[in-house]
Length: 205
Image (tube, rainbow, N blue to C red; front, side):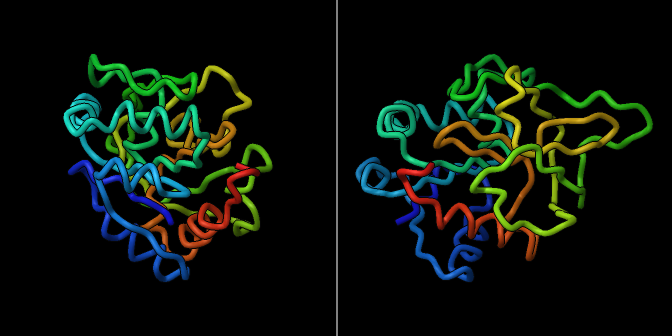
């Protein structure tokens, strides 16, 4: 069972609907017992970095997720803000992130381009990975974000995208996966990526 973490941030219903279309079952929950029993986790989100961390801590989910991901090595997919929370921190706030990935979140500073970066853009696949398996030749995904991630270890970079500068649009390390774009809003491209995540075998994550 796939558990979509419900901490009051983000349009998680569209993720659940996409997973259902693929042919898999998911549950939306903030219950620690449900999270502990799940095979895989999805952490989505939009909005403020600090507010999201505060919400997770108030629901007693911060340490719960840390244990499930780092100790039990459960596969997890972070989407948009959910991906950013997996890093060490953000220019947007003062709270520390999970720190699962050696990376940091920076605000876009781009001349002659609108921020937030909003709309369709192409991703480049930087390494072979179960999440990128059999994706389309030209992969177009839907983005909405004002902050971008830079990874310290280039080996963690899974996808990159250019918007005035090259930024990390996806990373992966062992059982941890993150994408800056919204696969649930990216039609056939997002459907294939989410299918890859659903198909992940725990021992191969």
